Length: 162
Length: 162
Image 1: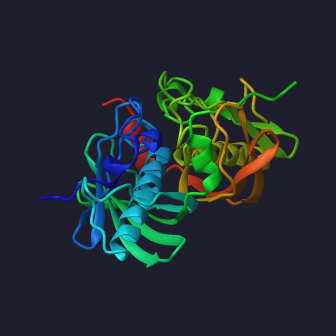
Image 2: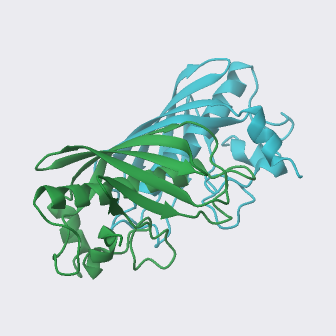
């Protein structure tokens, strides 16, 4: 049985990210979960997420790598502390992206489901590094790296109701 | 008087990019134009483009840098050939992103118009390098680099009607 997605466990007041917030009705609702020692997220782009006809727009691929990277960072920080995602585990640690790099290897076909697979490179107290590859039809279309850092207090304060 | 946006001049069959296609009704419609020796694009994110409440989602910032980078690459390749954008200039050269890097400097406030400013770093026959900074309320929130390459023939063939 797959483990739950980490984004399913974010508190409701910080679950509105366009990329991965379960409460953003317009968003992509990317869901990141463990698959052994790697992490996985699956997304089928919408017809409007085109670059030129037939191919996925690069910003969507970057968004998938970005949000799956920060989700994977939360999973990795939790696992480093001995915690596996579950409804009883409390709120996951929350990360933001400090730096994002994407190499586009080949045009990504529009239509098939994409899978982003994350490899945890480094887990520090404040910083987690995740490599993410994006596959379509079994072929890697993009490879990226996310440097994720703990969400600053100033952002969490910004998220509180005024 | 500002020069036209390069995306306004793309042929209709390749003007559907979610990020910068003028014919993508759901998209961001990013428009890149010269401003002296730099390039500029302005975008006001929608309410749903949130990260956590009050801040812009990082994938949108990456998308803005990506599409403004390839648009700036087209402008730069044209200028290197002595062509300025106008309705009489024909179809612009078309670029795709080979690599994208973004450093997120501070949380980007959601609400104000963003400006992406491009600096042309290198213009080669096949490759153009553009640095892009994203500003909100006069402060740089992100800095990135786009390695843009001429669009492969295989993508243009994919764009032709079947």
